[in-house]
Structure formats: structure tokens, C-alpha cells
Length: 278
Length: 273
Ligand SMILES: Nc1ncnc2c1ncn2[C@@H]1O[C@H](COP(=O)(O)OP(=O)(O)OP(=O)(O)O)[C@@H](O)[C@H]1O
Ligand SMILES: [Mg+2]
View (cartoon, rainbow over the protein chains, first blue to last red):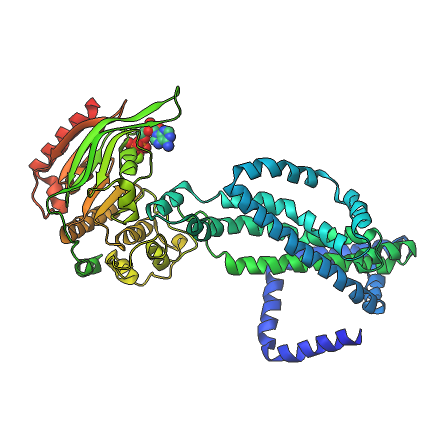
């Protein structure tokens, strides 16, 4: 806990120099999003009011203020459980998407491979993740492996579908152009097909960023003693509702943070308009 | 556009090795699409000789096979029967030797590349000998009047500008033959007129052989040293005629009696197709 506080204090002093820039950014953000901010604030206020007005017991539904205090009281626990979940989600995201991308490349160049393995991918996708988790825990034990696999599996399918579509998105005219230039297959891939697929890929990666967190948490529900998923289960069984709510907020925050990281990278990488020709 | 006047001089004349030879020679060409049974004949027994350094415009009703003929010369469609020779070689050899460049109806720029990077694409791909003379991408962009827009992405350029980038890209390898499939079809008339004049100047200064498909009879007559007319069902040669108008041609020439006589004759021919 003390580490965390120190860390954030350091952060403030470093960014002091950029204070005005940060203030501008905050003001700009507020100016752009004030309807959403007011709506969220309204919902929280309503929640507080309902809990207070009907005197709802804390174990059933804590008030926002109680949840807020739960962050402070359980800061160390939340932080300790956030890191493993982040690690699982991140590794699952990397491996799931990497395998999906490589498979998509193979599918695009070999229709036999596509015909053979696409149905299997669909079948795997159709198995409910929650049903897959116990199976993987039985096979791989209680460690980090089954969590990474589930987080990866949940990323895998949308990326595969989008990447196959993206790699086929290069217009026939562009491929004609490359042929007139006698470009090799690998040149066509690196200079046309891959760049043309990036908007499709990032659309999938944004979905994967949030669902990888979900996958990691679901995996932690089954036979795990750490992670946000395990914390959710534990807090529920012990009627520690404010902690439960705080954990849910952290989990959502983690997913949103990953989403914005991917969006940011996308805005740096994909700077063109896909339909420039028309 | 005026900067193009001076810039055009930067284009060095293409070396003519076999003077007055045939740039493109098409003999008894048949092109059929589809599989046996549901075959469709796009071109039937087409024979054309394009002299080196000539500017041939191609006219014909929609779907008669103009694009198909051009694409066959460029080794983009499979030849069913007959033969094509490009500078004395099969189209595949000519393609690999970068003897021709193709300008499509749409600019087909890579949207993630800036104007200058699109122009230099031909220098980055394909195996081409380093002895082959190439032009400087910046010079090429200046030649088509896009100095200062080097870093612009395609979606930041107008349709006419994009097409000019595509032309600069085609010229960068200093091809001996330019194949152009309705390159100005999507442009407004004023831009089109300007680019027509520039194309003529470029042709006269470089000696490049040009095959130019168009839907516009005036454009075909204004540009063409020869007009090749195809008719459809199946696609075949209707007429191959020399345009008896002197170069250099100015836009005002389109109002002369002689010009109008030729366009009228072609229009009558086209109606028969
Ligand atoms: N890849 C293909 N597969 C099957 N049929 C084709 C193919 N390409 C062209 N065709 C057919 O060949 C015929 C000639 O087409 P082509 O595109 O050469 O016509 P065009 O003269 O260029 O027409 P337009 O003036 O409209 O551009 C058309 O009937 C077309 O449907
Ligand atoms: Mg056509």
C-alpha cells in the first residue's frame, strides 16, 4: 500500500511542470463529455438516495459512500489482486490475438487450411467460456496457465474473423497494381494486405481488450485464491458488499483502461481514411 | 498547372532501341472468361499493331472489351488464344522488365501512404535492375503540379490530385509504354482538359508509347494519333484510323471544322457498333 501512495506522489511531482497542459486536458475532457459526466453523477446520486431512503442494509447493497470508503480500507488487497488479473488478461490478450493473427494469415493464403480449421474455431467459440474454465483447471491446475488460456480464448475468435476479413479487404485494383509492378507475394503482404487489415484488426483488438479482463476474472472464479475474480467470490461469501462493489469498479476500470490503451495505439497507427478512393 | 510546363523538361527522352518498331503487337487475340460450358467471349480475333512512340486512343461501347485488351497487354488477364508481344517480348517479360506502367480509372493509391510515398512505391517493390533509369519522386510530383503536397495522405487530396499522383507513380520508372484505362473518366471537364494537354506535352517530350482508353469521342480525337474502335458481342476491331490533325494540339483545336468532322465520323461509327 505504502508503495502505491509513494508512487503516485512521485507521479504528481514529475507532472507538476506540465500542470497547465494537464489542466487544459482535463477541462477539454469535461467540455467534451459533460453530458456523460452529469449522467453518471446523477446515477450515483440516485443510488445513494435509494439506499438511504429505503434504509437498504449494507450487505445487500452498499451506498456509493461506503464503496468509496471500501477503496481506502481495502486498497492493499485490491492492488494485490489487481496485478495478477492484469497480468493474466495482458498475456491472454497477447497470445490469443497473436495466434488469431497468425492463423488468419495462414487461412488467407491457404483455403484448405481455412476450410479445415475454421469450423473448429467456430466450435471452440460456441463452448461457453464458463463451462470451459473447470475443464482447463482440471488439466492445467490452479496456476496462472488456465487463466491466460481463457483470457486468450475469449480474444481469439473476434480477432480471427476480423483479421481474415481485413487481409482480404485490399481492393482488387490495388492487387492489380502490385502485379503490374511485379511485386512478390511477401511485398504484397507487407505493403498492401497487412496495412489494409489494420482498421479491421484494431476493431477486434478493442473488443479483445475488454473481454480479456472478463476472461481472466471468470477463470479466477474457479479454483483460484488470488485475482479480482477470486476477490469477488470471497467478498460475496463473506457479505463484504462494499469490497465486492469496489472490486467490480476496479475490474471495470481495468477493462476501460486497456480499451483506451488500444484506442490510443490505433490513433497513432491508423491515420488514414480507409475509403480514400471514393 | 503552369509549373508543369517547365517541369516537363525534366523528363528525359526514352531511349529508342528499335526505332519505328512495334511497341505492342496483338495477333488474332481471343480472350474468354468463365469455365467450359458457360464461356463468355470478351475478345474475338483482335489484331492491332501499335508503332513505337504512337499515341493510340481506344473507343467502344461499354463492355466491348477495351479494358480487357489493355489488361491483356499488361499481363493482368489470361490470353486464351493468339499472341501479344510487347516490345518484342511476351507481356510477362515486359512486365517484369518494367517496360510499361498502368494507370487505372481510379487512382488506386495506398491510403496509408503519403503522396510522395505512393509515387515511390514502384521503386520499393519488384525486382528491377538498378541500371534501370528512374526518376526522383519529388521531381515527379512537381511534374504533375503537386509540389508542396508531398506529405499529404490520399484522403486529403482531391480526385484530380489523386489521379495526378497515380500518373506520377506510373512515370517514375520511366516506362516506354503507358497503358491508361479511362484515367480521367472520373474528373471534371476543366481538370480533364488540363491533364489532356499535359499528357500530350509529356508524350511529345518523352516519346513514350501510350494506349489510352476513353469513353469520350472528343478526348479520343484530341489526344489520339490513332483511334482504335472496338465493337461488342463479341469484342473485335471495328476501325483503326489515323487522326489527321497536326501536333502540337491546343484545346481550341476542338472547335475547328476538321476536328468536328472526325468526331462526327467516329460517332456515326460508334452508333453502328
Ligand atoms: N474477370 C472477368 N470475368 C468474367 N467476365 C469478365 C471479366 N472481365 C471482363 N469481363 C467481361 O468482358 C467484357 C468486356 O469487359 P471490359 O471491362 O473489357 O469492357 P470495357 O470495354 O472496358 O467496358 P467499359 O467501357 O464499361 O469499361 C464484359 O462483358 C465483361 O463482363
Ligand atoms: Mg473498362
